[in-house]
Image (cartoon, rainbow, N blue to C red; front, side):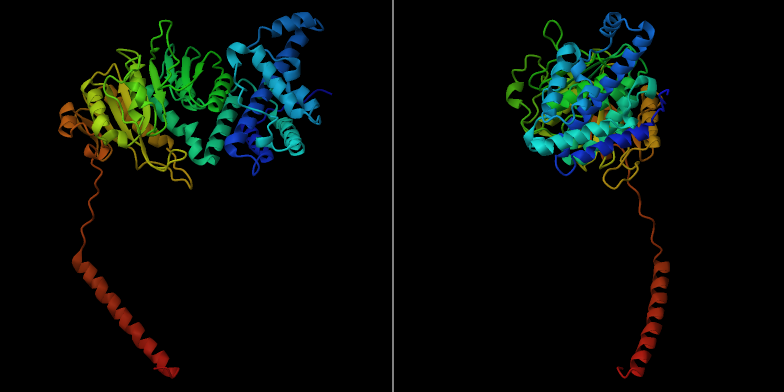
Length: 510
């Protein structure tokens, strides 16, 4: 009987994957179990894609195993026999199933060193502390294997097609995990609507190099890269958290960005994206959602920074915002590079060392736009944030200010930017870039184009209300009408009181 291949929908796949998390819920912390789920998703995808390609060659070359093996060796990745999902599933009842999975992952790394070395080093399927003692651990892993054996999670290209269903599923899971992880969620995921906004503001083009120095799971830079609508794009990034770095590497692979260079390390204290001469690499677009006001970011080493990134001034020890901004601007291509960075509002107006650094950026005419966002957009914080856009190829000395804080869809836990909110911001920004907006009010209560004189007059304070007037006048009160309403209410009250007195008298209580 011929096998029936029914293409599962994105919703079917997402639901089945989220249901697989039930194996761990209430037992393992979401910050931990996300790694087990995402690694299994990755391994299942590799296995199904490998199996599909093998079957294609087998139909073409028959039983010529030697030729098939040679052809398979030229695939995007190599998958050793004992690393394939079907093999692991056949061993699901073994008492050492956790160890079997660990060895399978080690073999995947070994066979794909250039692309996947180190990706699974922080995941242990034989961990007692995370997965429980042997009996409980084995039961959970067996359930996990059964969940991924669900026909809806058939990731063969011949079944799901060439659409980015697996990449979308991976992003879906990361977003759900970020929501469950609370404050920690913001450390590895930027909400997709904010990523889309940044992608449209920065407008990547084919052939460009894009970097995120605080890359997290990679969702932001992938969205920015996809805006170029081309495979001819180079992605770079660095991440300090080892587990998150691994998620990012898998995310890149699932989005066909195998060539992305993602380094593991502390960007501020140990930048790893260097050229052959040991100098900071330069990029067409630099984008990031760095940790807000990072304490102990490495100020003690900043003065001796070999790359001289902090020549405009050294940020305070307890707030690393301008340290990240300084790094990003220094790594943007001279004469043309653009930077998009998400920051807390304090970056716009705090004084002392930060005020001096901000003034230097403005005097060098590097800042192009300030966009104020609504509150509660980001995981782990309810405070509103802003986007700063720097441009080393600015055509004007003016700076665009947008107050987009009042346009959003309200959610129970988080607010979201709607497509029309994103379009509104982008439309104003593009008009400014084209030189269509002169100095002054660009849109009433929404956007303002400030001259260098305006900014100097405000002592280089970029607090958005100083430029965009959102004040709403209270409607005039008609005193005569209010007095008439009070008189009418008093008459009604007198009637009610009279009726009440009558009732009380009848009851012998008056």
